Image (cartoon, rainbow, N blue to C red; front, side, top):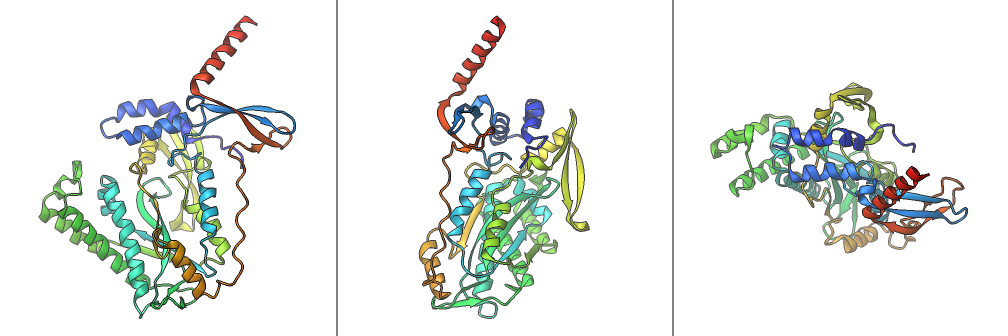
Length: 395
């Protein structure tokens, strides 16, 4: 893939310091750490390494990545490793993609209570799917799946929702049979929507009683118990969106699809169209009008503000598993699923090819493998740059 003409890092380097000074009152330490990481990513400030081609001895100097999960340039390696690991967990059945979205008034509360409300969003979605699937009138089996939190819309506005990828079926109560879902139908959306709403509202009510919610600024009127109760009742009049996309064609398609959804940030560098001293323009899909691609131009400060809306709390887990894919029972439960699907005697899937050494990349001259020969700290890089300047001045 060709390098994009503009990067989020360019915007942060040009405008980040001024933005921090202007909006320091509402910015958290996490916000500032993310901006600093993106600003320093793949620069001498983080150190680097010297490489040499195995075939033609071409030298190269590379700077280290920040590895921050909010950085548009640092997710490829993590995504590839994660998808390779998930390949061993695929079942030979179809998969369905469901999305659970909270209404806009609740999203405002989530913005200042990210850890609590996002946790409740995960919990409500997982419990809803498991409960409806277990009902004999629906599927009548135990299911499992993975969930990925996205907090953004196409225009970078705050839009929290959870993507769920679930096998089309589940284990029978006796654990000996696999119950297949009906073709092109998994679980009734209307039932999922109603139960999801009830579980999330109940979780919010419990969090309020336990004193785990904050109500700063414009949310202060909700702090009295009566006012918060009225707010929760009003949520029943809001549109709660739960929808299912068409089932995947094959398990192999699942892997390709997951790679697009799991390791993403609010905006990729390739969506940026133009960056000026005052504005940022980027592409977005207008799903209400046939996914038409449009261009949106924002003031630089507004662009950075929207980007920071999607910074997650430190150590918050945004990819989670439930049911028979939960970490505590995944290995034995998957074996039981394969046995129930009469797949235990089939040859296991071939393991993914071994990952190349972390320092190996194609030589720009001959295409050979570049190998790490020396690691360099930020101080060493500064000294090298100073020495190069001295030699240049004396030549």
